[in-house]
Length: 319
Ligand SMILES: Cc1cc2nc3c(=O)[nH]c(=O)nc-3n(C[C@H](O)[C@H](O)[C@H](O)COP(=O)(O)O)c2cc1C
Image (tube, rainbow, N blue to C red; front, top):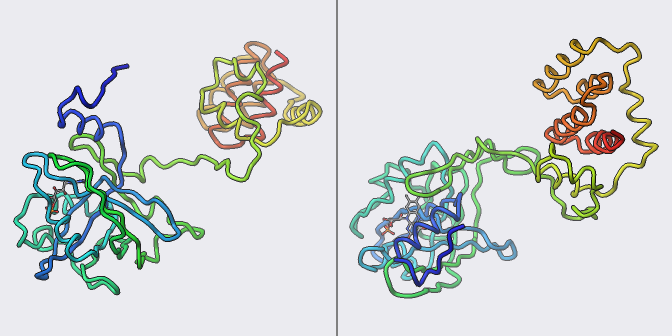
């Protein structure tokens, strides 16, 4: 590990560490309006949501790195105390990047970026038509941390109205594949969230057994990853021996095939993520039984069939 105290680094180095390590960052596309009625639109990735009652979001229009001056978004927000925050989809990311260029205060970035302004219902700043999730906000508190270049100005906002495209929902939740958002990473890197989506079951409301209750032979296996063990720890109970034996009986093939055939079938099933077939063949092969059963367990975990995985993992402890 490398170890740093911010006081020993330049501001630029500290900034680079934060931009590289705190990732991916969601992007707030913030629309403000000046006292004279000039629209402003800029992206901010020092941004997140912090509570739902009331709905609170915050972003940081920091002081400019090169001369510590304040950004137009900051000046407008302080003056008018309203903004609209919208999320950034993959289809609009280049236009949003264009809106981040340093334009003079009298320049309307809606015009520069080609994004479409539409009226808000409650606040004065415009919404961005192209974004499928828009939040009309009022300023709750603005907290500045320093006056040097790149110092933070945390703008804490209350959401007074949400606008959400109807077609984003699947089973009552906003579907990450449909909303198709991008996020900011270090340097010029962005990530497209829909291409890395996976499921981790929530432990909320469950009495999880925890890592320490996982039997030793499972914890010490070289086949399972830390995430595999985390899934076991997330269970509420461990199947008992009788359950396991009854379950395994269902997969014993009465007329086992020869080793080569069975082993090839095992590998093919692994390739196809068919962990049930893997179990059937693993049971009919005498060689490397423990490893094959553990590979089967791993495949079941990969497919989130934790009950199946438990039973096979416990049975593998007999070898
Ligand atoms: C994706 C992205 C994220 C950004 N995040 C921030 C941020 O969190 N804070 C910040 O001060 N500037 C951030 N910037 C830079 C501002 O968008 C940029 O300084 C912009 O010119 C500010 O415009 P304004 O002066 O009209 O407010 C970001 C730029 C991009 C492209």
